Image (tube, rainbow, N blue to C red; front, side, top):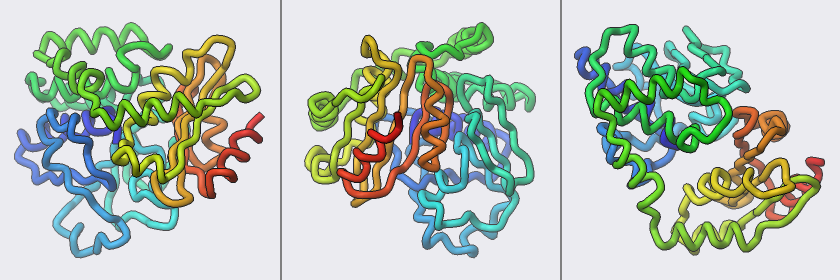
Length: 296
């Protein structure tokens, strides 16, 4: 999970608790330690949707799904379905394909899901205290790479200013997002950069599972390299970063200057935005590299 999904979830959690609602935060993956500064992030339960029995969801009236363009992003697999209950989707991905839901709040012009959550909380007349403001600001800052991407409309900057005025702890967000990297994470980033190759108008780097395990399974390294380097190399239109986080299962990030990488990601069953997208590619490392080379 990235800071947009975590920030959106924790902001909504805090608001719903204020409204005396019973809320449980769940995620198919563990929350990174450096993101647990957000109020409520340490309460997120890691759920295995393969074994999540119907009896566990019966006490709940509603399933709020944030920052996820399809059900397999939530469950972790296209083979695993969600429980049969009312669902509301809040998202900003242009490739969102949810249909089995009570309501879908989709705004592809929003910088982030956190920005949509902010508008929802204002509509609910929720008082935005500094903890909620910090969660929302973290989500916006994460998905825009601190206001780097093109979709940073004037509205997003206005919201960011309002959040800072409400006490959002920008310095803490910067510290935990960019200034608190583990040594193993830095080494894994180095592996990505060392193995980077040139394609036809793009760069790519693919790491195997052995390397991923060797450096402590640092899932954040792929996104960091993608955000900081993949679209920033002169004379290349886009970049692809992939890591084998499970045997024959690669998490892939796409970043671009102008090419619509969501179209590429969609070919692999993924999705996202024009300049930032993701997918899961199956196969061994040679097969995955071959698939990447066949893109253009």
